[in-house]
Length: 206
Image 1 (cartoon, rainbow, N blue to C red):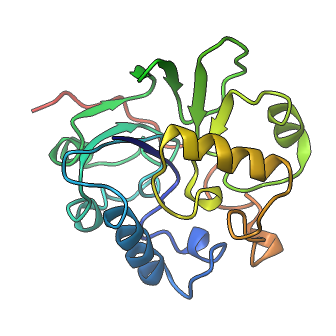
Image 2: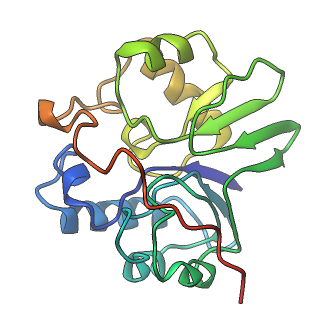
C-alpha cells in the first residue's frame, strides 16, 4: 500500500500550539501512534515535506519509530539540517521533487503546491489547514491538486483515495475533525520561521 503525508513538524512547539495537543511531545506521540496504527512494515510512505523544523537537527528519535519504506520530498523546514546526511538512515530517497505511479494514477510530489490541470494528481503540503486567502481560493478550483498535510488528514498518512476524500471535505467545509480550527490566531503562519529559509543542498547518500 502507498500512503502520503506532510507537515509532521516533530518537536516544533509553534506548530503544536496549532493542534489539539498540549505540547510538542504530546504531538509527537500522537503522530507516531497514528502512523504506526496505519502503516505496515512493507507499506510505502511519501512524506511531502517538513518532518521537523529548520535550523535544528533531524528528528531521529521520532523517525526511527515509524514503520514502512519512507521517501522524503523536502519542505522548507527540511533544508537547514546540519546533520542532513542522517535523513538517509530513515528515508530510502531524499528529493526536492518526485514523480511516481500509484496504480493507474501518475503522481507529482512537491512540498509546495504546483498549479496542475492534467489527468494525473499533484500532492503537496506546506499550507496546513488554512481556509482563506488566494491559496485556498485557487486550489479549490483544482481538484487534482491535493494537500497531504496531517492537519486535514486525521493526523496520519493516507492513501490516494482517502486523500481525495479528505480534500473534498476540506474544500466543501466538511467534517471539522479533519480540519480543526487553529487554537491561536497568531499561529496562522506568522512568525514560524524566517522569510528566507536556511537552505542547504541535498546531501550525497552514504
